[in-house]
Structures are given as structure tokens and as C-alpha cells.
Length: 134
Image (cartoon, rainbow, N blue to C red; front, side, top):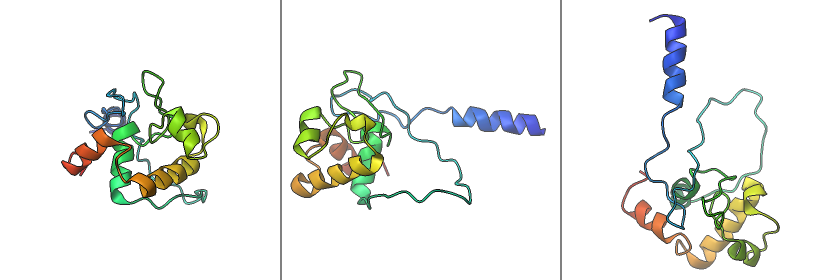
């Protein structure tokens, strides 16, 4: 197989669909694909991040494909964790969750998780418990 053929196969492979049925809490698919897994360069930036339990990592994939800019088709649920505006504000969030940094979204999601466990994400929590996300 020539170099161009390999590049074409790699490009086609990168277009594969997101994991089946990644649902937002409104029953929609959230409209976003999982983030790509490109190798990091040697000069990567050090960004602040929140240490998430495995269950929360899986819930984020289920809710939004892990995309901090995801918006449900109805527009009601926003960001990586598909927050409603009421929930976002009750946790101390300002503005639109889908425009907030991933760090801010993760911080507020962990605040909610410490308060209520996985209850705020019932459908995705059920799917994670059933082993759909590894």
C-alpha cells in the first residue's frame, strides 16, 4: 500500500462515528462526537484540570462525547456535563456552560457529584452501570 493510500485509510478511520447512543439528559444524542485522540506534541501546554473519578469520565462521554462546547438539540442542556442553566447557576456558574472553560465545567460537575452522586445524570449513570462505556 502506497503512502497516499495509508494516509487516505487513516483519514477515513478518523471519520468514524462517535460511540453509539451518547445521550444527553434530554434523551437527545447531544449532537457531538467524541474528541479525537491525536498524539500530543512535545511542547504541550500545561492546563489546569480536575481529577475525575472513572464513573464521571464515563458520564461525560455519555452526555456529550466529552465535548465542553456541546449543546443538546433543544438547546436546554449545555457543555460537557449537559447542565441546565438553572443547575449551572445554582452551582455558582456564570454565563453559558458551553462557553465556560472545561476546568470550570469539571469543577462544578464535581461539586454537584459530591452533593448528589450520579443522580443529576440518571440515564448516563444507568448506562455506565450497565457497562456501556467500558
